[in-house]
Each structure stands twice: as C-alpha cells, then as structure tokens.
Length: 127
Image 1: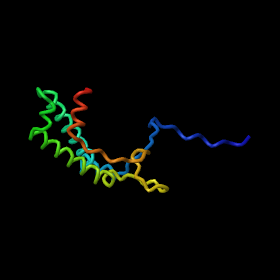
Image 2: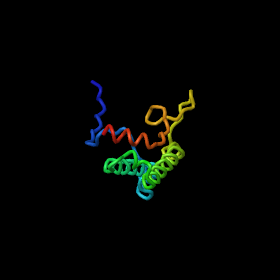
Image 3: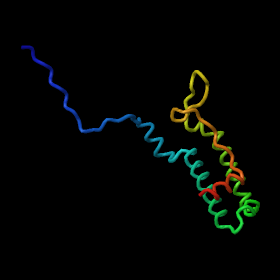
Image 4: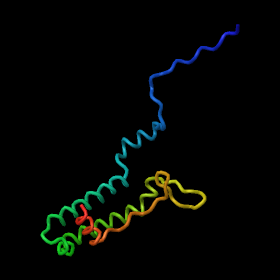
C-alpha cells in the first residue's frame, strides 16, 4: 500500500476576497480618507443642511430665493462639479473595453446631477 502525503494543517484564518499589500496599507495610514469620499460627505451634509433649512422656513418657496440658500446651493453644485470631474480618476474606475464607458462597482458610472431649487423643494415636500 503506497503512503499518502499528509494533508496540510488548515488554519483558522477566514477566507478573504481581497488582500492589501504593505504599500497599500502604509499609503492608507498616511493619506487618510480619499478625497472623493470626503467630498461626497461634504455634498451629502450640505444637501441635508439645505433641506433642514427649507423645512424650518415658514415659506420654503421664498426661502429658496434667499441669499443664504442660493450661496449654499451654488457651493453644493460646485462640489458636485468637482466630484464629477475628479471621481473617476481618484477612485481609479475601470473602463469597459467594448464601450469605453467607466464602470463603478460593475455598472456604468453616471455623473451626479446638479441640484436646483426645485429639486430641494420636491425633497422637502416628499420627506
């Protein structure tokens, strides 16, 4: 009867679907949160602040035309424009070879739409 090789000892380490190299870990520790994530958070926070301000106003339609809301809305759209411009590069989005489109988590990437006063009023009315 031939001798069989002993089976390797199984470890208790769980199966992983990704690994980070030491270079990637050091880069993450030194650079912190990526710019596109910080920018997306600023967009979400500013949009939430605008909606809260419109909810608190006596007349939301008139509040949309105020200087403070208009300035915040302009800043929001500027952030969205920067996000749309730099996100594909910063997130290192892959390109689908057949179509040439950028992919974001397996689906075609679409830029964020600019926000208008009407969009904000619609969100205030539905929420």
